[in-house]
Image 1 (cartoon, rainbow, N blue to C red):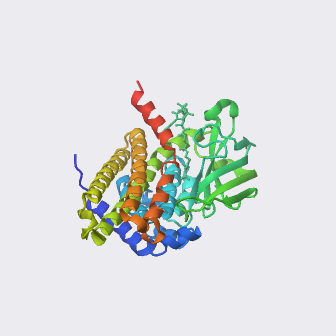
Image 2: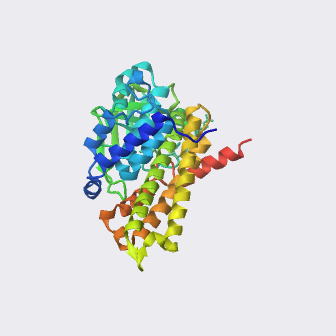
Image 3: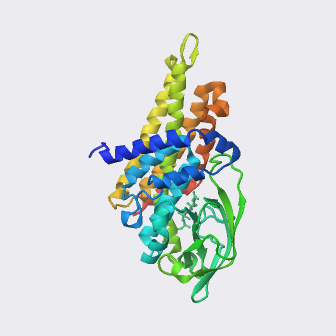
Length: 380
Ligand code: CAA
């Protein structure tokens, strides 16, 4: 057993850190204020290889491991989680799903461009009345022979407007329940597909989260992923990996807030000395650092198991559950360390606190993670 990162992994971490500092930091407050999607920055992320990190180079990806992905997600999320959620969805839901379960034609047509970040993907599972209870899909994909007729609404879709390719989960055979669900590749611009309203959110305000409407959209049969009825299993197994990405995002939010709190505590003086010398602040920093280290180890372990092609469902859910909890706790404390300055936008920690909350909600709420964990640990 080793805790050492390879030279390549360290280089990826450093590249992500430099990118975040040099390209994301300057405009992040403005983008949060104006709810502006970091389009230019995401394009650069594609050029640097961050949008298809784990994809085989023969499909345009970086051929990296999941550990490297966690390291990059942490660094980018320290600065801008609106950029990192775009990266996470593209990497671990869309690219991974297509590479693992797509046909060669689907990979050539979509994955090669998605992996290079030339286009962005979205993963469309949640609906107005089917969030946690994901088997209750109301969106329908009726089998019409050569194509599916897609009707329904999807909610809270990350990359909703900026994506070009959408993996849409829909019910084809309701009597078969979850075994009647399919996942279809829908292209932006297909007739009957409309991008709906943009959500005005508490955090990750630069991320474009939209509802999507499908009215009699004709989706060719060749755009179905896997066999008929594979859609729910596809969504679940894809989300297992997604949860490592969101765990790493939560870790990055916590670590970013912690780094700012340490820096501030060395600059700010009260009662005649820097505030980190007061036990009240020193103990806060010690607790933050300990929780972050535990969250990091959990994310890396889940990634390590995935890279070894072992079952990582339990570890991914544990990592996301714990890291998102840590993100909330640490960001609240980071605001507290900053005092009044923590409550204003200029010091970044209030934004990190707002961004942290979503990590307990998307890609499976904390309650869903507990269900997954409880089922796994009590399985005979
Ligand atoms: N991995 C692989 N397969 C899984 C799985 C997992 N983690 N969880 C369930 N399955 C499989 C089961 O094995 C079962 O298959 P079989 O019948 O073939 O055995 C099937 O899925 C149904 O499972 P359950 O009977 O356990 O279904 P359930 O309804 O009791 O519970 C659930 C399933 C775990 C609660 C699931 O509905 C779930 O994960 N819900 C949360 C959905 C979610 O994470 N949404 C996030 C939206 S995407 C998003 O946020 C992206 C973004 O834009 C940021």
